[in-house]
Length: 87
Image (cartoon, rainbow, N blue to C red; front, side, top):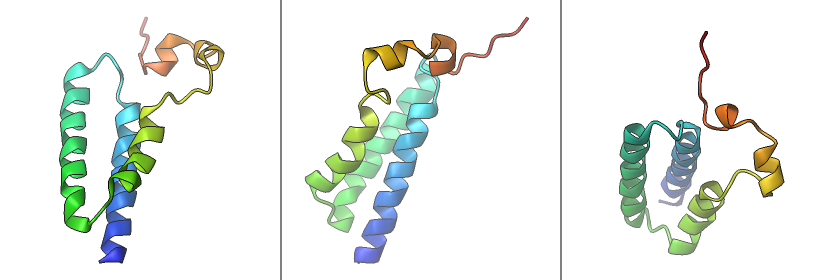
C-alpha cells in the first residue's frame, strides 16, 4: 500500500503543478481543475495520506512561485499569465 501511496502523492503533485500553468484569465478551466484537485485530496484518505503529507504537497505549490514581490514584478504580466499577443 505504501508504494501506491507514493505514486498517488507524485500524481497529486504533478496535477497541482499543472494547475499553476493554466492561465489566470481562463477561469472556467481553473475552476474545473481545482475541483479535480479537491477530489484527489478527498480520495487521499483511501491511501491513508495524512493532512501533514497533503499540506507538504499542496501548500508549497499554492504559494506564490516567486520569492518576493519584486521577483514577481520582474516578469511581465503577459508572461506570468500566459497571455498570447497577436498582431
